[in-house]
Image (cartoon, rainbow over all chains, first blue to last red; front, side):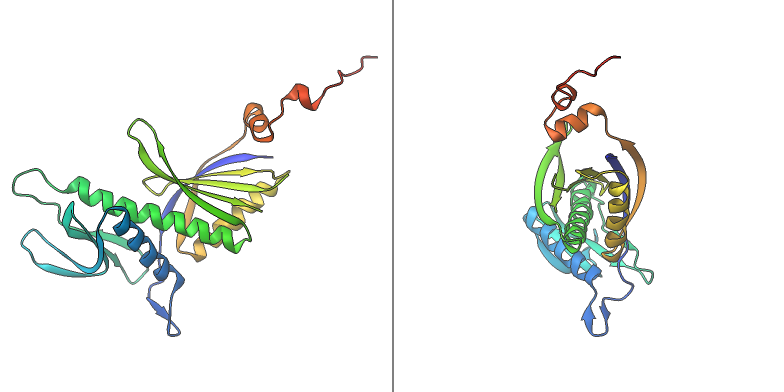
Amino acid sequence: MSVLSRYRTKIRLSPTREVDGKVDPTWRLMQEAVEATAQDLGGRVADRVLDAYNKSVVCDFAVITPGFPRGVGVRVDSTGAVTFLYDHYDQSGRGYRRAAADISEGIVQNYTALAVAKALAEMNYSVEVDEAREGPTGARAVVVRGSL
Amino acid sequence: MTRKVRVKVGIDGAVEADFVGFSGSDCLEEAEKLAENLARFGLLVDPTSVRKKTQAELEAESGTTQEERDPVPAQRK
């Protein structure tokens, strides 16, 4: 039997960054996802974001881009649940909602693709990763291919 | 036939998985194994739809048509 399956996904990291003195694999993966997103959007990785009043807020990870210099932060709570932290308010009314969403969506997509690639590699698949565009908006999709 | 898995990750993190070259219930077992491994990497997956491939999709995968697989017509008694 051959099937096509679709899944909703949820990211849940280890509640603590380090376990037995080593960085937990889920935190390493988030670091990689954040770095990949910063690179995709021409930005950089940081450890804090700014609000609309230039107040700095410390996060577990953050991505700052030219399109959204305040940045999007990633916070991991005591259960390992991930939340994104940003201030999209703009006095001119234009807002930064889209720019912030580009960063948070990029982090989620990159984390998911990296997790799939690593999980398949652990199952002894040879893995290749490509990008594709889909739908009328040309939204980015990441395609992970594994062969045994 | 080589066993392949093709996973497409959408902008919202939703995942579409296509298992090629598996027989019987092997692809379902492989999907379960993949889900277990993903959980170890901090990714929890929740199936929203699972459907059998159509004959046309299966033929496209193997590169053959029904006629090519059965070149000799069935004998009638």
